[in-house]
Length: 307
Image (cartoon, rainbow, N blue to C red; front, side, top):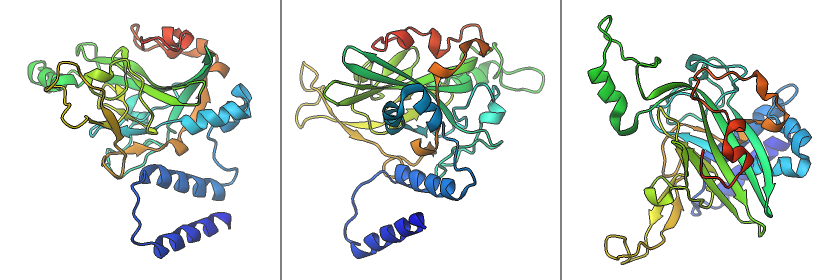
C-alpha cells in the first residue's frame, strides 16, 4: 500500500506542475521504482546481496557501497551483462537483448547481473571498488573485428575466428571495474578500467584521471573497457587548439534516457557481492593471461593506475 501511495503522490505532483520539466536521470529513478515494486510484492523480497554487504562491512559502510554503486550503460552492439563467475562462464548465459529501451538485470537465460565489491581505507580516504566479470572479451577497437573478419575467415563455412585464440583481440574471462574514491572532506571521485589503465572521461586528457561521478559507467562493445559518460565543456574562447596550455574543461553528465539512448543496468537492481567474504581459490581462469581482481596491484594499492 505504501508503494501505491507513493506512485499516486508522484502522479499528482506531475499533474500539478506540468510546466516544470527538470533534467533528471529517468533510467535510475525508473529502475529504482520498478525494482522496489517488484521486491515489495515478491515473496521473500529480492536477494540483492545487501545482507552480505552488511555482514562484510557493517551497516554504515554497506549503505555507502550500495549508494555509490554505478549503473551500467552499454555501447550499442554489446549483449553481455556482468555476471557471477561461479554461475556463468559462457557468453550464452550472460547475453541479454541489445535493446536501447531495456533496463536489464537478468540475461536471456535468467542469470542475474552481479557486481563484486571491495572496500579499502587508506590515508584518510575510502576507496570502493566495483568489479565486473564477463565470460569473454572481443576487442572491436578501431574496427579490428571487421578487419579480422575480412582477412581471417575460416575456409570451412566462412566463419569469423571469434571465440578462439586465433583472433588476437579475443580472450576468455574479462574482469573490468569501476572505482570510487571518497576524500576526507566527503567529495567523491570516480574512474573506470580501460585496457590496463583507467579513464575518467573517454578522451585522452582523462587518462588515469579521477572525475566527479555521474552515477553511471559506460561499457564498450566487445572489450568492455569503461569510462564515465560525460561531455567536455571548454571555457569560451579557450579551446585547446587556440592556446598553448590546455585549459581544464568542465564535465557535463551524459545520462541514459536523456542524452544516451542505450541499454542499461540501473544500479538499484544489481546484485552486489563482497569479494572480502569469498574464497578466491575456487576461481580458475579460462585464459592464462587473465588476472582476477584479487591478484591485481590496485586490489592492494587502491591509488595505483594499473588496472
